[in-house]
Amino acid sequence: MFKVSGVLGVKTGKCSFHFLTDMANSNHSSQYFEDQVNSRSNQNLEEEIAEAKKVISELNEVDSQKAFLIVKGKIQKPDKVKSILTIVSRIAAFLFVPLLIGSLLTIYKITNTSKPQQFAIQEITSPPGIRSQILLPDGTKVWLNSESSIKFNLPFDQAQRNVALSGEAFFDVHKNPKVPFVVKSGNVAVSVLGTRFNFKAYDQENKVEVVLEEGKINLNTTKDHGGPEVTMNPGERAVYDKTDHSTQITNVKIDKYIAWHSGRLVFDDTPLPEVAAQLDRWYGIEVVLIGPQIENYKITTTFENESLNQVLDLLELSSPIDVKYENAKIDKISRKQTRSKIIISRKQK
Image (cartoon, rainbow, N blue to C red; front, side, top):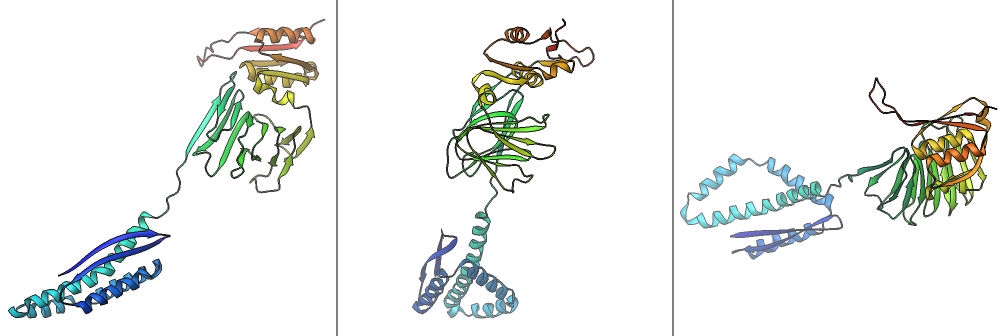
C-alpha cells in the first residue's frame, strides 16, 4: 500500500510540504513521486497555486464513467485483484498530492490574510470647575483644564501617539524619537517628540492658542494637516484665527498661559472679559459682565488656591467694580439646576 503523511511549514510567506512515502513493489514509482514532491518544494506560492488549478482542471476532463468500467472489468479477474488495487491506490495517492497542496494553500491564504487592527477609542473629560491630571499609556503627562476633553486610540504607544483635543490641556510629552506625539484640534495640529507645551482650543472661542515652554514643536494650520509646518521655540505663543485662518507667533512671558496647570491663576494686564472666562471655567460658575465700559478694564494679580469668595473680594478691592453673587436655582420649567452666577458691573460713584 501507498501511505502519505504531510506536514505544513510556513517561512517567509511560502508553504513547504514534506511527505513520507512507502510504496510497496515499486522503487521506480517511489522515486518518481519523491522527485515530484522535491520539485514542488522549490516552487513559489504563485507556481503552487497555478499547478493546483491545472490538476483540478485536468480532473474535470476525466471520463469518470469510462474509467469506472475499465477498472471494474479488471477487478473481475481474481488473479489481478491485488495488482489492480495497488494501481488504483497509486493513482488516488498521486492525484491526492496536488489536491492536498491546493487545499493547504487555500487554507494558508485565508488564515494569513491580514486583518485590520482593531482600536478602542478612549475619551477623558473634565467637567466645569474641575481640572484633571492624566498619565497616558506612553508615559506622557496631561493636565486637562475645566470643560475640556481628549480622545485617543488604544493601543496608544505602538505605531502612533495621536490625541484629539477639545478645550485646554498642558502636555509634558514622554520622548520617543521613533513615534511622534501629535495633538489635533480642527485645522491646528502640533507634532513633537518630547517637550512641554500648552494647547488651548475651546470650540466656542474663535482662536486657538499654542504656548511652548521647552523643547521644539512643529505647528501645522492647514485643513488636512498636509501643508507646511512652522517650528516653534521655547517662549513663543502661536495664535490661530479660525475666521481668516491666519497665524501669529510672538515671544511672550509664558507663565500666565501655563500657570493654571500648577494651580495658579495669573493675570498680567489681562482684559476683564478674559478674566471672566477663566473664572467661569476655574470655579464652574457663570460670569456675566454688565456694561460696555468694564470690558476695557485690565487685571494684574495672581491667585493661588484661593476660594471663590476670596477672589471676588480681591477683584473688588483692586478694580472699580461691584460683584454680586447669585446661588444656583432650579429652573421651574426644565427642573434642571442652573449654575451659580457672578454679576460684575461698574462701581457706582
